[in-house]
Length: 111
Image 1 (cartoon, rainbow, N blue to C red):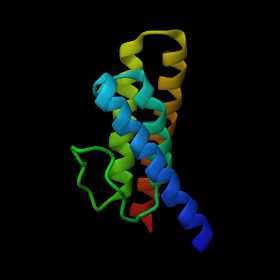
Image 2: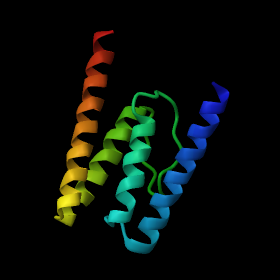
Image 3: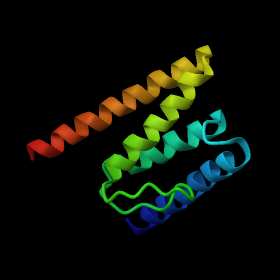
Image 4: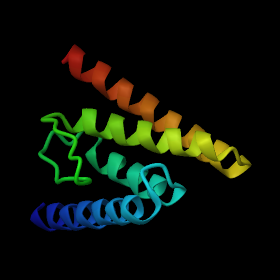
């Protein structure tokens, strides 16, 4: 519905801005960017729609699944560098979501 799409666009804007601010103040690999990256990736999983810029170094892609993959991968790298038990749990969740994304892609190829 149009209302859901509007809310999704607002969420994308909020998460994108959170990532931008985190990168601007703390650098590219700060833990504060990981959660919004994960949430933004979930929003883009399987949507097949255009996306807004995540940062000044925009990732250019016509495929929202590719964007989701890149966001999950960046968040995973951040969590793996933290080396805390919570970051390990977060890394496991990201890997789970990456697996879901891969399964979605396989499903698309069989259609």
